[in-house]
View 1 (tube, rainbow, N blue to C red):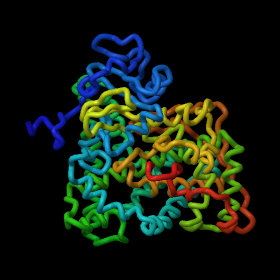
View 2 (view 1 turned 90 degrees about the horizontal axis):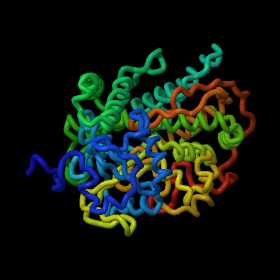
View 3 (view 1 turned 30 degrees about the vertical axis):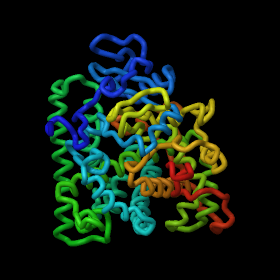
Length: 505
């Protein structure tokens, strides 16, 4: 049976909910289910996540959807989501959308199955690359890339042009992870069109999303050929990058140096050449796609809430003062700016769901039996809108939800933009530092003016991004006054700390 089971003895491939939920009939599904087709009435191939949010509001904290011969269970109620966060009973499940990325990312950190040994090896080798000392080393490079963004925006302002927020945030975050992690410069800000690596990356993410919506992959033969070409381009780009590093010798101790030259501290194992490629692709894709979305949503809300922008801007002026280049520790002191980022991630977590599977037979929430290997999709974007947690106005943008006093009153496992447990995003502190730094720099330099006619539309390609968001800029006057010493600031957790206290998150 080796060819039909995983290393855990579970069947390979997609496992429909009928295989793992003995009392599936008790879980509600949308009305008007059609034979063979399933719950397709009113659904869109382009916005499956937003469709699921709509069904969640109608059907409650656990529901199911059927697409052709595939049945999915969704969970979003805070109590059920907290139950699934129990690492003793549940583990990461490489769900359908993520599994569709395995042809390009293989057993990289994000796409590895739990039984694959390279996940633990890579995690242990690379975790020191996100220590406080390592992060402080990345900070000057983050500043340098942010300067390139602001030069780009200054030219647009001088020419009287609006700025393409998602496009420019993508350039920023790609250059940041490429430079800090791999010593590479894609030259994104010098290009009039997206870098071919970005185009290939968007292609693979979009194809993975489309695979979720068709009953038979052969219907996407032409798209599959394009996807093969996109994967080949990603592989070739990374292979060239790795070859250059090997030829030139070690860099400055970045992630690529760790991948190529670090042995596991206990076993002495090292990452294979193939796995190095997969990890580099994982970091380049995951390390910029989600952060660019988070920054874009935050800038959208700042442009629509001038009172919030003024308060955040006043904090930057007070804490950083006239400092030309804020230091690493000064970023963590932007407590309100961090709340703005957290609130944007609450409403639109750019990784909008994560899947969990039962380690053994269990009962979810004391009500729903699950067999070993049964899985469900935790709908993060709806968990973050649970009115029992966030109130009747959960759809409203309000950074004060992340005031320390408010945070302490909330149960754990209610804010999950980076996943949960041992397989949560390894680079979350990197992303939070980068995003908080960039928001601080942009707030200090510009006033944001949105188009009154713009209505937020969200593009889905496994991750989320505001579509067509452009802002007009106004340059601010110089900032007077000295920075406020840390003792004078309000009592709040570090901007790099988790907003939900305790080991649960």
